[in-house]
Length: 163
Image (cartoon, rainbow, N blue to C red; front, side, top):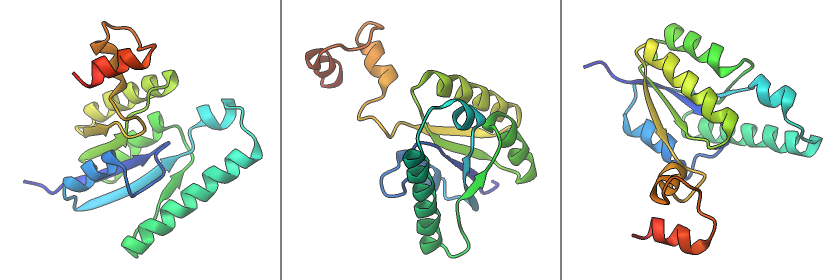
């Protein structure tokens, strides 16, 4: 059996120490692991943010890259400037990627983008590994457990999560 060649797609989860999706990628015991971050034009050109938020993002990317290099001197964060929907399929082919791993996101645009990326990965024969990491519970399971509606009180959340 061929060793996994994993593309790890950092997004809002710019951290190493407690990322369930990154741990899942490492659990595959990959032959190669490429950590990437995409400058998604949707966020770059449509999101309204100030200079302090951009500076924080850049500082976080630098920190992740330096942390990766401390763990493996041959590794760093690849920061790529293109929409993931067009970039990732190119990388799948160019690098013979077998797996794509990332942290699931709950916002509307991210869900659409991720569905498209997962479809494209499937077309390229790439297995997708996702995990929730920013939330304590899987938001889709919480909504499903509450009869298809979001929880509006702590009591509803406790009922769904601690059953």
